Image (cartoon, protein in one colour):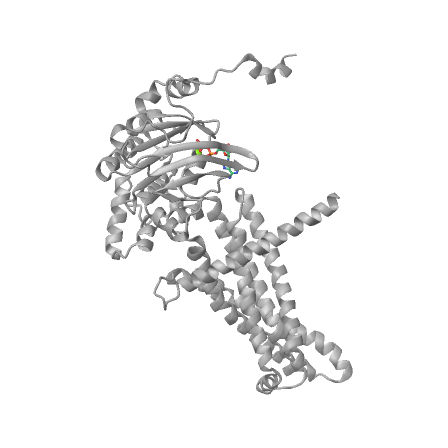
Length: 265
Length: 283
Ligand SMILES: Nc1ncnc2c1ncn2[C@@H]1O[C@H](COP(=O)(O)OP(=O)(O)OP(=O)(O)O)[C@@H](O)[C@H]1O
Ligand SMILES: [Mg+2]
């Protein structure tokens, strides 16, 4: 009985969590719309641009490094197997498609979770426990509009860029491998890669980037807004933001991949 | 219970408004407010009326729920039951727009100051002006400076809240609450942790605001001296209810033992049994 109860309770909690996220997502969209430049109201440009720098520009070196290493790993691992079949050329396909469809967006997301997801939840969590969020509300400022939206817009702008950077550095690293093993110049390698890649690869890459960015910002903010207790509550929420973001990102990745596998061949 | 004064709300409205305020509708009307954290009730049926232009001081022991009451008037809490009307709007069920309008008429200073740590003190005070008005930047700067001077802070605009002392932060949060020249001020212990000179300055500021701008002011304070000075009426929170509401003199001369202890600054007298936890050490 208690076992069933605990299953029931944790199910209810999960559903509540997803529900809370969905509500916040909706409010974020509404607020984003409300501050769009066409209907006049104000976007906090300064905050947004600063967030872009923090979320995007500063993450660029790490994203490139990690994706480059991943591309090289893919090439080495693939090469080791494909060599047996004398099909080394397939390494180009392997690296190109897997980086674009899968590993580019994923590596970018993982770096952004580690850098920004955690810091978003820590920052907002600290604001929650010091009553800064309440102070915003009493000033008739909507925390979602004031705190979340600049981060969300910055993320929507930067996540696709980071993903492109990740894909490129992964593919370039693959080029280094083919240069030494297949005596293939970089320009030939890139040309071959471009031939292999299809529209659907690029669309799925960008779709994932947008979805992952949305997950990271909203989970980070949600964890921050719902902090209870003092500093250790903030710590807990930061951990949760990272773990839950990774889980949801991988889940979303699976759904997207399955979707593209079945519906867009 | 003392029968001579109105106690425990009863039918809700407290009849003891000051004569010159009696004709008015209350600007803040709390009815049957019950608030629970988990299943522990902190407020169990609070009724309170605050009339436009009066200064209401909320008294009560530490942990009696004063901050909780204030937070609910600010629309920050979810009461288990009861209603809170501010300027004729039910805070708990108001639409976005109504809530926004009511809140723009409210200036709030939290017990913990709640300054935005990522902004300078000047930006903190200027924030409501920047967000809600179309004033020129130079005007905003000037107003910010003025508000900070009113609370005895000058030349701190470019410091961050973490670079201020606790008392300075408190005063900065009072300045921020005043930024929009609100109709209603809600202060949670504005002079706690301030030296007597500056605390007296805050009292004077409050009296000035009341006289010059006819602001409605609700203040939580422990400083009885200052409470008697600034209050038009006072109320005492005790065991989750309003024990008594009345004018300064009525509270000063109230016969309820808890209020007497507050006014006379006398400690709780404990029974011998309260020291029973010591007996273990005696044998
Ligand atoms: N977030 C919370 N979760 C659980 N209990 C709370 C919370 N906030 C307040 N309480 C409880 O509610 C009661 C009233 O708290 P409140 O802060 O309103 O007291 P107070 O009258 O303002 O005290 P003080 O004069 O010390 O500031 C306290 O007993 C406290 O333990
Ligand atoms: Mg308090």
